[in-house]
Length: 156
Length: 290
Image 1: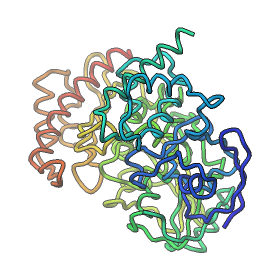
Image 2: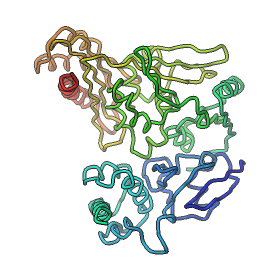
Image 3: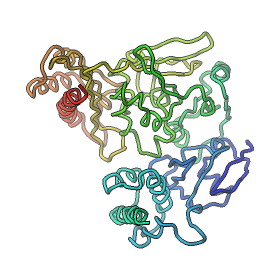
Image 4: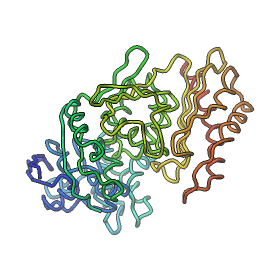
C-alpha cells in the first residue's frame, strides 16, 4: 500500500492502492468513478482510455501508484455544468454509439486528439481512433461524430 | 485479469535502481513504460517478486546529439522521440518507425529503452536498432558497458543484458548526408504487431548507393539483417531490376515463423514485396533529402 495524491477532474483525491492496482481499477473501485470502462485488461481494446497530464493513456496499463502527482481526466470530467460537451453532443447527434461500452474510451481518446489537432480530417481521425475497438457500430458513425465535433469547434 | 501481488520499488536515481537490481537480481522486473510488462503480469506470463519502477528517474529521459551520435535515455517516451527534432533530423529511420508502434495512447507511456529491452522480434524498434548498428549502454554493479546491437538481441524476448544490469541509454549513429530511409510494415490492422516489418536505410552519393542497411521484424526470433542484399546494393545505381534481385537475396535464407496471421510462405512473399517497396521509398527519400 502506498499513499498517493492526484488530481482527478480538477479535484484533489487521495488513496492508498496496492502497488498492483491499475489506475483503471483505482478510479472505479476506490474513487467510484465507474465511467471508465474496463474491457480486455491488457491494453488492446482502448475502453479504459483516460487523459493523464494532457495525453491519452490506457488506464489498465498504468499502475495507480504511478499516477501520484498527475492530473487525470475521466469521462466524468467532460460534461460542463451537467450538460454535454461539444464532442459528446456531436457524437450524440451522429448516433455514434449503440451499447455504449466502448464509449468512454472513444470519447477520451478523441478529446485528447482534438485538443492537439482541431483541424484533423477523416483519415487522421481514423488513425487516432485506431486503438479503440467497437463491436456495434462499424465505426462510421463514431468517425462522423468526431468530424462533426471538429467542425462545430472551428465554427465557434 | 488483475495483476498478481507484487512488491514495488520506485527509485529516483539510476544508482538506486542499480543497487536494487543487484539486491533482487532475477527476482525483479524493471518497469519502464509498462505497455508490454503490465499485460505480461496480468496474463501471468511474467511473475516477478518485485517491480523496480524507473519512471521516477528523470536522468534516464532525454535526447541529445554529439560527436556523430544521438543518445536517447532509456526512459524517453516514444511520443517524445516522435516529437523530437533531433530524432527527425539525425535518426530519420527511427522517426519513420515510431508512428507504427501500437497506438497513440501506447506511445504516451511506452519508452525507447523499454521496447528494446523487451526485444519482441516483431516490434519496430529492434529492427531499427539492428539496421543502424545502435549501441546499448547498460549499468551494473561493476559499472557501464556498451553492447552493439548485433550482440544485444540474443533470442525471443531475450537480450544480453544481465539480470543485475539496467539499460540506461541507446545510441544511434547520426545519419550522414544523402541518407534516405523507409519503414515498411504489413499488419492486419494498423497498430498491430507486424506480420513482417522492414527498416531500410540507404546512402546515395552521386546517384550510387554507398551504404545499404535492411533489417526485418517478424521473420525470426530476433531482428534480422539482410546481409546478402546489402552487399549486392552497395556500389550500384538504384533500379527496379536491382531491387527485385535484392528482394530475392533478402528473402532467400529467411525461414519466418507461421502463426494464425500467416504461413511462413506468406511471410516470405510479403517480405520480398516490402523489400522492393522499402528500397524504392528509401531511394526517393534520399533524393528528396539531398
